[in-house]
Image (cartoon, rainbow, N blue to C red; front, side):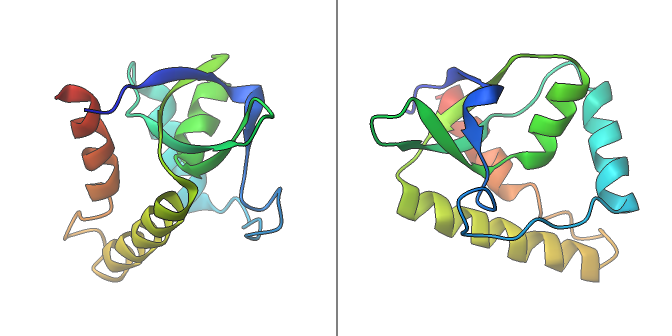
Length: 124
């Protein structure tokens, strides 16, 4: 069982922030996704990895959820800490699943599998 914890949103660093990814434009699809998440009362946990001895965390999965929480003026997010190597692999898998959903016009609904896994880790 993985213990979830509340992480301060201001302590999150994105992959783009540390040069391991690129900032993507906030297109209509992303804005609509964030808008829908903002209406939700609860959020599934985000995935983070500790940045050694700094108190900061790399945000591995959950950028849209964090943006929704910011719009709700929340200061913390429910998080699960994973080792950075596995977190990067999960982030890559999530990107592939989102692409599969986009290509199927969201009929397959597989892009939530990583989120569902993270939720199952705290539900045990």
